[in-house]
Amino acid sequence: MTYQNNFEKWQKKKELPEDLRSDLHKMAHDESKKEDAFGKTLSFGTGGMRSEMGAGTNRLNLFTIRKATKGVADYIQTFGHERANQGVVISFDGRRMSKEFAIETAATLARNGVKAYLFEDSRTTPQLSYSVRRLHTFMGVMITASHNPPEYNGYKVYGEDGAQLNLQAAEEVISFIEKVGDELQLSASNFDEYVKSGDIQIITTKVDEDYFHELSTILFDASLFNTTDLQVVFSPLHGVSGYTVQQIFERLQFKGLHIVQEQFKPNGEFPTVISANPEEKSAFEYAIRDGLKIQADLLLAIDPDGDRLGVAVKDENSYQLLTGNQTGAIILYYLLSRMEEYGVLPENGRIIKTIVTSNFGESIANHFGISTENVLTGFKFIGEKIDQYNKSGAYKFLFGYEESYGYLIKGFARDKDANQAILILTEAAAYYKKQGKSLLAVLQVLYKEHGYYKEALVSITKKGIEGAKLIKNALTELRDNPLEKIGELHVTEIQDYLKQTTSYTDGHPSVKISLPKSNVLKYTLEDGSWVCVRPSGTEPKIKYYIGVKSKTEKESNEQLEKVKNAMIELMESKLK
Image (cartoon, rainbow, N blue to C red):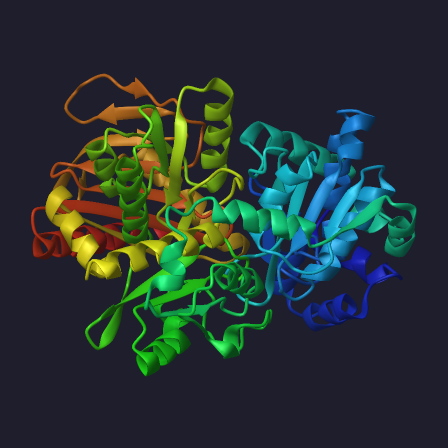
């Protein structure tokens, strides 16, 4: 069926909400917009769905939400009545339509014989992950698009271990969604009736209290919070973490928390930020303003769905933003050194990081005799490993993280948890301040001991169907014509995670990669630098990750710029 046929079918749908009817009217004479909205079916990937909202088969709306949920329900039904009765817990962030999409999800599940548990108000992603485990549900759904622009929303699906669906389960769910067919043929469900019947259960704050208790168990010395003079400015960036963070710090009697008031309440329009992404310096504009007023030691910003933490540390009369790799290194060092101090560092301890995360953390872990495991990009792979460790007993999980500001200290949640991260990082800052040291001073000591690891990320946006083709073609070109050099540096090793092979340019035979297949290429260069190329799983982007290490900060910064600029220049011709 052509995009014109799909568009006409939607035009003829009588029970179409007014906002979607308006969208159809606006694109009626714009063939490119019409093709983008109706030229394909919104894909449900291994992490769920994320898209612009609006009318169309390739947009997130009540009909595509209904279709995805019908597929999830059909998948659950194959496991029998007991699993269907275990049900699905649903949470949502503060974006446009998030609550409406959550209600639609709950009602569709109930209509199809699956019990639904729905939070009465917005909660963070890690709280959803925890609730799957706490309520012993079979699955979970989080309605969120993280830090994407206001016109986006998303639908993430979790397994009963509290982690995002593993690859096999995700592929099975996708197959059931594809079988559903025409989303317009699915009838709406009566939410209120299912609440009355008990098929939908509204979740009370008891689950929150249990989560708050678990958070308290990650601390080494809770007394640091009510004895320190540490001053912290915090912003939830118009997201849903404000209430949770405020609660956990109040319970610890921490007097040094200052909240950016304009950004405290959830607001899906994100009116005070260019991007609600704590990786971006612009997201800290208001926090820096407040920090300078009170000379705060630390600025902390959490992204809108509460799973990623950004950090800035006072540096004389300004603030230095830390990268995700730097924050991860500081948290890891604090965890391992305090465990060693308390005599609780396990012999079989292990940290987990992604293949695009700095090797800095691995060097720190090695110093403490702790092993490191690398997994594919995506926190679901870290959650999957935690579950494997718990079942086999082979390793004790100590810390999981990724360069994109995601951290997990304890496995009571199985997705990245900014609530855990903000607690342990604040405790670390208070601990080191008592010793007369800032987090920047700690970082410099780690660099001197382990080498100056520096990293960069370049994201190139290519929107629409045509953009997706350009990204696909660029990666095909890299495989068909393997890179021999990046800039002036020769490539010594190529890891192709789609072919699951590591090949060497010196003639050594290729070896198999044991990780799952993924459309990722990683190059190691003659000086030990590395570059990784992958398409984003949630946005219309191709990403280049670069990592270098030298004996001095100056050398590392210079080398990083050289490799980054060479990679950008090399890829420009491949994306045309």
